[in-house]
Length: 147
Image 1 (cartoon, one colour):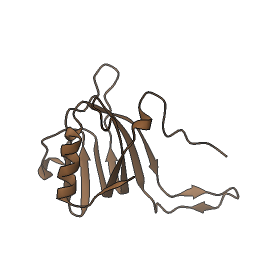
Image 2: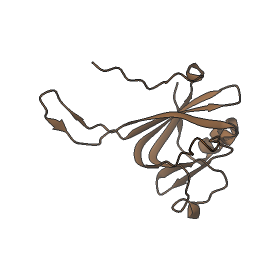
Image 3: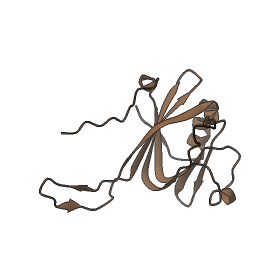
Image 4: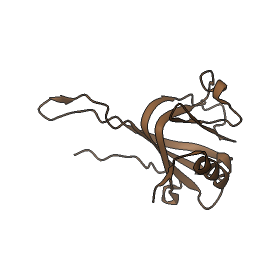
């Protein structure tokens, strides 16, 4: 079941329930634009979906895995660490600004910090989440099956 985050009360409740993502990691993500090319090579070139789904795994129970769905994606800035550095998330920032929700992989950021932040940042029109403990482990979730 998907849970909507519609206001600051929902947002604060979500962050409190999940300990602001302390001791978690981004496992994988999937972006769906809405654009595609048909078999006859005609194109539907409209980004009318712009949905980003992210699987986050945590070292906590209830839930251990959370799936986030960012709808109406405005942008994703991703700066993954290389194999010589650790990639766990210690805290996140989520902020409503200009009718958008921002998610950053570091805590304690303010609206002023959003543009200059050098970590992973997501901006979308809406966000929802669900418990997804069935996605625990290293197996890929978003495998996609070709026709």
